[in-house]
Length: 388
Image (cartoon, rainbow, N blue to C red; front, top):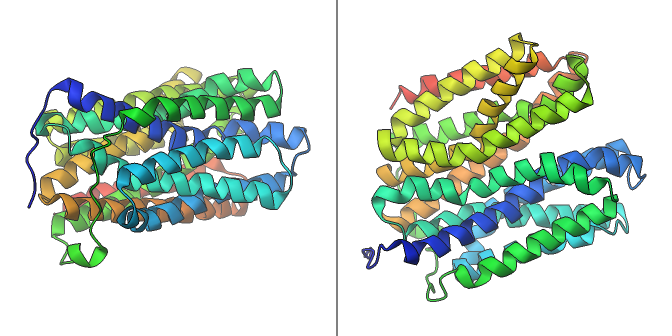
């Protein structure tokens, strides 16, 4: 039996939204995106060589997939709130551990664990928070939760370079301090009275409706579409187009601005115009933006496109959640389905990362080839939407 929301005052659900935002900021926004601007510094400081750094970067994506697969199982033994608290703390501790590169194995293990934390948080956080939010505010609330991902991108493009001027170790320690503060602030904001357990997968199995099948495929194709821009934007602007490292960094900051705006704007769009139509519009917009990225070399255009493209990785999350709320009335079934979507997204990202890297190598370093592939993925996602 599904319980109605007994209280809908803002003061009762705003703390949970803040806690969700903090968890997504620490476990995904910082744990994943703050690593990117640290790569050159790690190589320069001779912590690891270039091949090792790339291998260590992949550890977070692998851990994310593990967390997405195992998050619900952990929540069956403990309450979802307890699991989220512990994984947010784990992600914070991973920054502290990475400040001391004792060995490649040590560093890999902590990057892997940070990914596990991120995947677990993604699977569980929306279910904990959104059940306390009235229906008319769920899209905006989910956007606010995953604004943390965008904030992580923004921090990686602005504050991390400033901290690197002090030292690489100081940067890792600063990230640890920021994450621990956010974890401490969010700890009492989580609802202590939430002692629910997620149902076992067997309790929510059944034939997947056509709408959910379409959403699952669109979500995975969207993940394929976002990967090359996320991986290559800075290198494309700075080296391939010859604009230099300063403008390459500026493009990443613009990407971060979009990442902050995306979750809230996309969530509001879902509340106002419906998730189905909003998903279709956003996929078309992303396809056109990636095509524009492949065709233009003008700085103003590149910066504008970076904002639009950056809005998608975090913004697609509240859209997916809103669509699922419309398709799946049962809370437990909805949370199980969200786990499937997160796994599909993580798998597509991992496969896409290797695929686009291989294409980049085969084409002799042609970023544009990967952008056209991404645009094709977005186009296919649009077409799939008409099959519903």
